[in-house]
Length: 132
Image 1 (cartoon, one colour):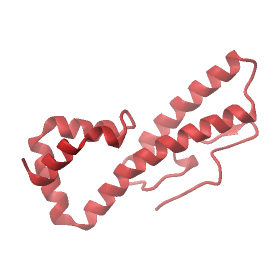
Image 2: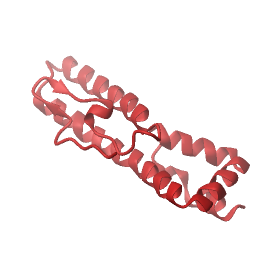
Image 3: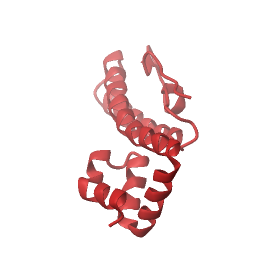
């Protein structure tokens, strides 16, 4: 279901959420992207207006920040989609996440864009995959 855009902005227009592109509409990624891109646009718009006005350059900065965040969120989505194709592994991981609530909380934080996937850590990954 992947949908990409050429750019997340144009003259006086900025795209947010699914309108700016998405990888999979079923995993909930679109909701995270919508909230994340709205926050980024609000931050960039407020900063630009405080310094004289919203220009094409500020919209480019928003778009660059949105793309950075989008890449981070799609790493998790790609992993989930890959796991779905390997049902035995998906069941194993879900079972292990149920035993490791802190790791599950971190996965959710990554899924909503609160923290980058890299913060999940090797220790959590090994624990979830190895079942320890």
